[in-house]
Amino acid sequence: VSSSEEETAGGKDMVSTRSPTGVSDYSKLHKEYDWLKEQYRQTGKCEHFNAFIYAKKSLKTFNRELELLLEFLGLNKTAFSKILKKFDKRTGSSIREEKMAELNETHRFLDGERLSELKEYTAKLLADSEALKPILPEGWENR
Image (cartoon, rainbow, N blue to C red; front, side, top):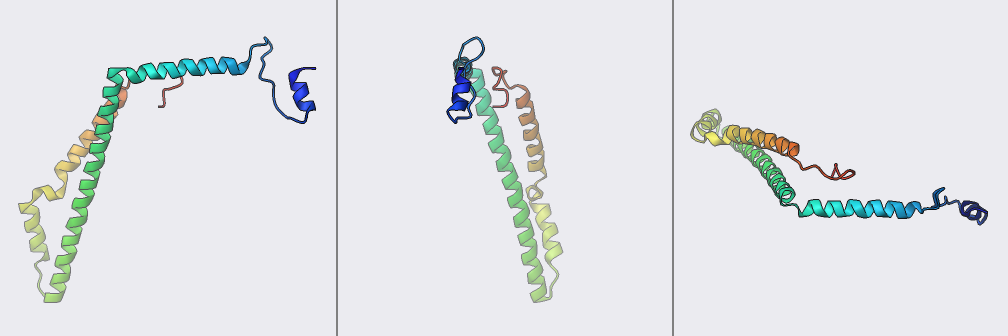
């Protein structure tokens, strides 16, 4: 009686872990796993790989900080505009348009144009860094 017949007869619905040649599939998989693990360790020790990971993480962090800064600028510009609108409504004046134009003229950085350009450039660098990614062992490409 084969081992799979015994397992089925014993109430277990399991497949044998032995191949037709008698070599354990588990043993073969374990050896492949150990080989991949060692390849991954070797790649992780590589100075080029570590520099790549550090640069990519730094670019991602910087890109996210630029996003937050642009969001902050937009929110504060909207808030200032609403405050002036409420002021105009309560006082009967109409200084909102004048003050917003003055603000845009004296504080050009508030429009976020340069930050948007920098964010686009950072996104391009991130895409370029992906093209420079070191070749990983087979089975680890998407890590």
